[in-house]
Length: 563
Image 1 (cartoon, rainbow, N blue to C red):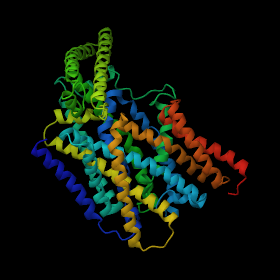
Image 2 (image 1 turned 60 degrees about the vertical axis):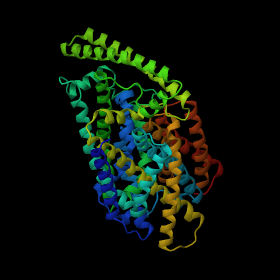
Image 3 (image 1 turned 135 degrees about the vertical axis):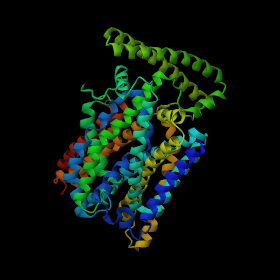
Image 4 (image 1 turned 120 degrees about the vertical axis):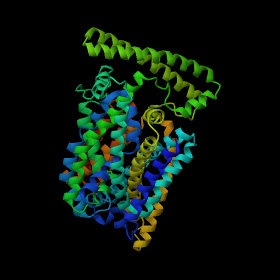
């Protein structure tokens, strides 16, 4: 990081934060703090919804996910457009008509306060854990660049977002989201251009995609039905549909975004805009990861992308073993480079036999590379048990720091920071809103002044910020791709929450007692199904929803409770 990088980094972040605060620094009641007085147009809503979903995890972990696993993760989003249509028809009119602060207020009128509080608690647990991971993502940057202790980097990130969330409330968050999405989009397009620019002179974008395809990385569509496979068309269309429907329809971090709109029509336009743009956006981000993979076929890749952990390894008793692995890696990298050039030449000459031979050789060397990486992970676990032995989240960051021009490094890191700030700010606001409206005010119905309620809401926001920072501290011990991890956490709860809402909307014969006990039983079963690994995590969403429906109907038959 040079002085120019720091100027871009501090300047970009400072502009975003100050702009958001100045646009709305006067909140006098809960409506202003949580709903922005319902005054925002559709493009604010659409960009805010996208920014809430597109955290630093998206821009750090997604390219690494594509680097290791190819493009198939994009199938995760195939159910999104249909979910946006269903939300626009069903959820939005109900929430706007009832003039609620949170989605869970509706459940008390339909069932009872017990169901409302239970559903709100499910959301609070899930969103609190996921937000901790969202804070951890940009903390990786500071930790990697400076070797700072992860606790303090988490505290800096979590505290920075807390500042403008407390001052500006949800309207400030929405205004900063617009700046963030414009900067993020521009920077990621330029990042993709730079990856292609750094490839061999004779190779363009389409050539790079062809090479990636022969290496098995452009695996966008998989029609094979396998419930244990994480990503295919069916898990994306069905499992993804239920997850997206629950995320955008019942997760207060998203509901709070489109409840700020001026009208039902503006909310609908904002969500439909998100449904149309999100898949191409995610496709582009994953494509950058695939292009980075191609770049590292022609250039030596680090054996392990997390330089903080490898630096510690060099200072450990296992240094000699690590250096031996690096020496083996250098030999494999040279071999891989020869094989990728052979593949490219065979593709140019359209020699199918040579292409097949080159593909087999690349697969073999890639297997050797993964074997060496696995050995490094084992050394890290032995020398530093609390360290991060999975480097998938560091692939894109390491590429940025090692190969992109100065100035742009600072800008791109600012992009990742600002993306995290957008999603974490929305989460803080939604956690505080749900705790205040659905838990605190229900348990303490005492009438308070607007200023008192606002002060309590801000204190609750501080509490959740501290909770999420603590979760972030332990996130590196989970050893997984962050973009997958947050969706796994969501899938534990989203199917149950969605089932409760769909019963409320579409089966008026079921009462509060039946839905309450069916939700508890279904939640237990979903955790057991996930632990047994019977299906991939996306399928937990439709299964959880179906369990809630089925058990609720059974309980209703036995209890004969009046609705």
